[in-house]
Amino acid sequence: MHNFKNLLIWKKAINLVEDIYRLTLKFPHDEKYGLTSQIRRSAVSIPSNVAEGAGRNTEGEFKNFLGIASGSSNELFSQLVLSQRLGFVTENDLKPILNQLEEIQKINYTLIKKFTK
Image 1 (tube, rainbow, N blue to C red):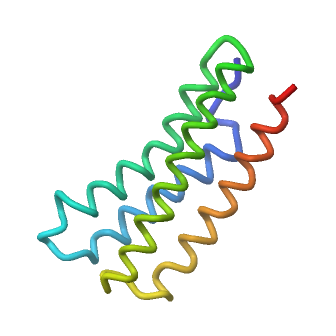
Image 2 (cartoon, rainbow, N blue to C red):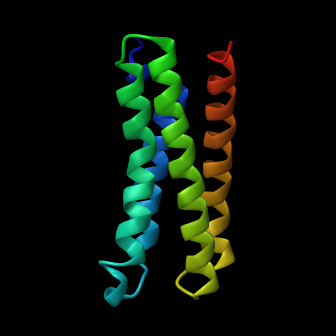
């Protein structure tokens, strides 16, 4: 249906995943299978669901996967805020990541509205 590699949301989400992996390298080692893993999975879920939805046959199916990506972005936001509250990252570390995430959420919301009839 859509070539996901050309979608702005996918490109921005892939960049976010790279930044998330770099950010979580700062986390305590004992969080490797805890919050670090959860954050990485949530982040990876965003471009993965955009790509999967783009490959589906209908706009309705694409919209459904965009909804899943939206849920993952909210999950990621919550986990990142918790990471700051636990002292794993600073506000300065987190601010550019949250700005990226907010931009992705806005693009995603616009796409979902486009497919809502």
